[in-house]
Amino acid sequence: MLNHKLIDIPPQEESPLAYADGVRRGDAMTLVRAALDQGNAALAFQPIVSAQNPADIIFYEGLIRIPDERGRIIPARDFMPFVENIELGRKIDAVALELGLRHLLAHPDIRISLNMSARSIGYGPWSDTLARYLRRDLNLGTRLILEITESSAILVPELVLSFMKDMRKRGITFALDDFGAGTTSFRYLRDFNFDVVKVDGQFIRGVAQAGDNQVLVQALVAIAEHFAMHTVAESVETQADADWLCAHGVDCLQGYLFGGPKINGTDAR
Image (cartoon, rainbow, N blue to C red; front, side, top):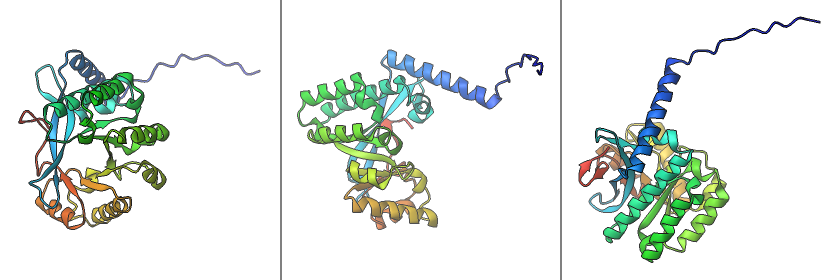
């Protein structure tokens, strides 16, 4: 029989990159928890305009923002990747929903869209907040758009479909966020029957000069038109891109060319 000698293998040192990522993740989660506990979260609003008449604001997207210890605004992209799959992400969705619905009540002449994860549908504080405000104002749902990403929707398609069916009875509109960036099959796209699709910004930036992106955007717009869904182009930053998108059938435009996210008139990118 072979003799096996047990050897103590020291743990490998964590790479500097992994360590830095862990620190950022821990810092982000600590910062977000503290801000939520203190009620410091806010929504920044970015306009979505008509492609044919950019002076016409169709609706605003409410984007969650968290201040750091110095009062500087931290955009969602800096913390959502770390929290979107855990309960803290659900708490953020619930806070954003509360702030957004409160804003709708205070401003009866606008429509707003709010981001949500499909995971939040079954999260009590989120669903309770939505139900409470819909009871308070029976017409509130007609001015609310809920944005769900492709990757989130396909996690629990049956739950999303049931939720959308129920909420449409209350007038709520649904948008598929980051269209083209995920893996939604045509079957799911047909079954979900979103009212709006938002074409992912990676295909929009520089589209006026990028032949490959032009082909992709035209294909995405054609798909949306086939399913009778309105299209929004994200990340529109130049007039040339806006002109191209307008000429190729995109319904609405969103991006810094028409205004960045703002909190009470102050830039909150």
